[in-house]
Amino acid sequence: MSVVRIPLFDTGAVVRDLRPELERRISAVVESGRFILGPEVQAFEREFAAYLGVAHVVGVANGTDAITIALLAMGIGPGDDVLVPSFTFYASAEAIPHTGARPVFCDIDPETFCVTRETIERALTPATKAIIPVHLFGTPAPVDEITALAHERGIKVLEDSAQAPGASLHGRKTGAIGDAATFSFFPSKNLFCLGDGGAIATDDQDLATKARLLRHHGSADKSTYRAIGFNSRLDELQAAALRVVLAQLDDLNARRRAMAAAYEAAGLGRLVELPTAPEGAEPVHHLYVTRAESPDLLAERLERAGIGTRSYYRTPVHRQPPMAPYAHGAELPGTEAAAATNLALPMGPTLGEEAARAVVAALAGA
Ligand SMILES: *Cc1c(COP(=O)(O)O)cnc(C)c1O
Image (cartoon, rainbow, N blue to C red; front, side, top):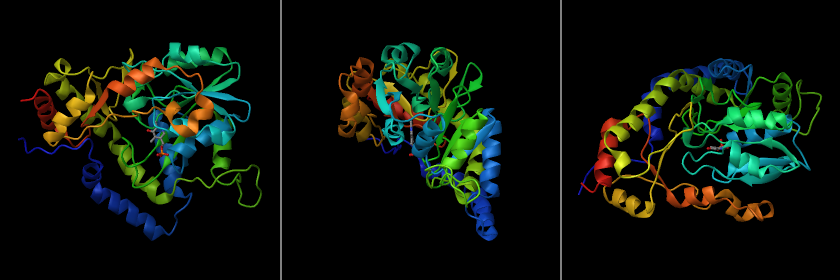
């Protein structure tokens, strides 16, 4: 029996590599005595906007609030429908009812795990006011085509980019293509902090101003209140950590791509269906999700070899009980196929190419 122990991902190892710089910058914040909406948040917002190539970034408390606040800032509310895939993390849809709008579930292409122009078009309703394409597992959804379709109909596009910071589509960064985008900096994401954090990115000045108000109780001056808002701020300690990780993001993503290339070079494609991306897409492999007819059998074999795996979203969002009011009649064959066949294999910037070869050997039963 093999002695290798390879986790599905290893957040702790990435943090340990950056620890001296993280500790230096965090100590400086502690020393400054300034913890909420100060210079670190401002600097991170400016640096991340420049990285993405957008005019505005607004830091918030987490990626779920980022979606709710961005939708509200777009003017979405009661009576509106918002299209969202069912094959995604629950929060992509959970954020919608908080605005008063109704989630409408759309299907995905089971080969890319992402929505397409066609799956969106099929799900459109007369009340659709916004679409949330999700760049799932770090693979860009074709948001350029989707935005063209949406804008013909006066519909807004909010990219859920939580899993894809640094990915690109036809040379443009995901998160800079729709009307706005949201990010999560949960510790397991490609761009992470040391707790909860999130952000909204947009070129739209009005949307950014509204989002800035909403994250801070609807107030710009702490004495007059212009909206029923939230307490949802990115804090100074998390922003300081994010500036350290952002500076390394391209390198961290390159190491993920190298691991994906190592899987291919080791012959993984002969054993399972490899992840595929839409034409013109440069993925960042947040997770490395393959497809197989019997993923549970393969998972057991890898488990015995000390290798972590997971099948994501086995019960897709539209079949989760709280979503029942929004899910009647939803027929999503691509979603059901993806839920039944997906198998995530170890992926991360610290796992390395040797780990990829060991996973392929274990899968092959060697
Ligand atoms: C992580 C994630 C979110 C939610 O982010 P939190 O920071 O955990 O609130 C939303 N959508 C997707 C696709 C995610 O992966």
